[in-house]
Amino acid sequence: GAGVSQSPSNKVTEKGKDVELRCDPISGHTALYWYRQSLGQGLEFLIYFQGNSAPDKSGLPSDRFSAERTGGSVSTLTIQRTQQEDSAVYLCASSLNSVNTEAFFGQGTRLTVV
Amino acid sequence: AQRVTQPEKLLSVFKGAPVELKCNYSYSGSPELFWYVQYSRQRLQLLLRHISRESIKGFTADLNKGETSFHLKKPFAQEEDSAMYYCALKGSSASKIIFGSGTRLSIRP
Image 1 (tube, chains in turn orange, brown):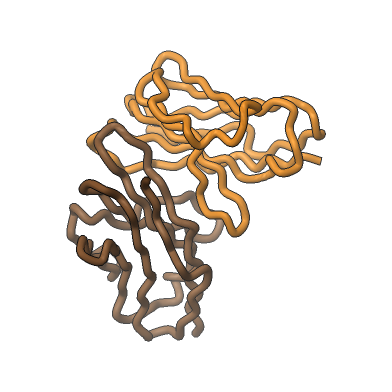
Image 2: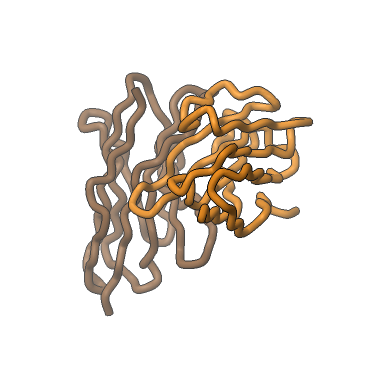
């Protein structure tokens, strides 16, 4: 079947606007992760879902960032009032469950805030 | 606190030379350790995990609990090994996966 799918692939937005990034995990995968990849910063953990619950949202940088997951499947990462420092590639990954832990990554969404 | 440290941002070696990408971690329990790789214009993908104890594309990594390290090694580098490599750690079963800052490996012909 299909791998992890993220949309849009690229997003250019004006400073101050809200954006929504979407992640479709592999069907049946219960664990879902969001990361931010910036030049020289590696992969910064944002939030982890197990099913629809988010047991760890410690990586969200500020209250402008939020995420939800519905039906144990699709997840949306929302950034409100975007700032230029939010520009990065946002990666989503899913794994079968918390025991079978290989993470499969999407192609990412490149967000540019101008 | 969980932490993964990759001290080298860039590692450049000649084709045929040995490669070692360093990874150190901090975690109070027994973590699961991984190496992920991202080739140019491709998705991040799993290279190997310590519980498998296998060699993938000639790469091996041994978990050293005493030194809290999980270095990635290959005896003879190939040009196709050029990529970005990330070390990652997962703690308890219901926890996030955290990544190091990555090492860019460049193999010179």
